[in-house]
Image (cartoon, rainbow, N blue to C red; front, side, top):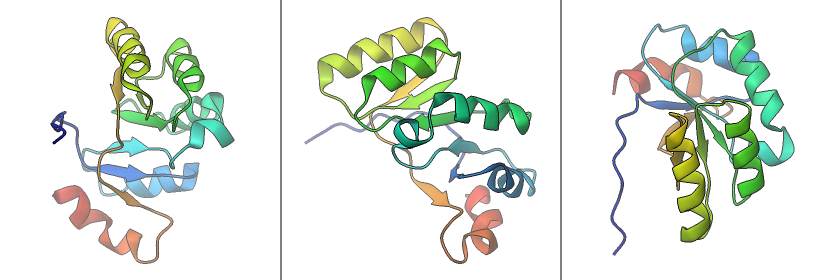
Length: 131
């Protein structure tokens, strides 16, 4: 049985665009921004950084790198504060150690999240963020 690592993060919201980030921030509640699964591979690390900068977001934000440790390292090199990386234990441990050394977060699995592209997600956003 796998042990589950508990990281105290505000509720996560999956965003796909600057409009999504603005929607997620509108209720004014603490949150964690999360990219779509594997977004580092199809949108890139610079896209995520630009999105966070455009929104002037300084809270917790996780770029999902799927099973691509190179993308996770790129994200950390760019100064991003968090990555999700589903990689074998030795690889994940190395990336997690590098992340910790620069004050970033590396998670082996994405936290539960509300995906804003799903029907009705916007209506459920405030209650999701309230916990």
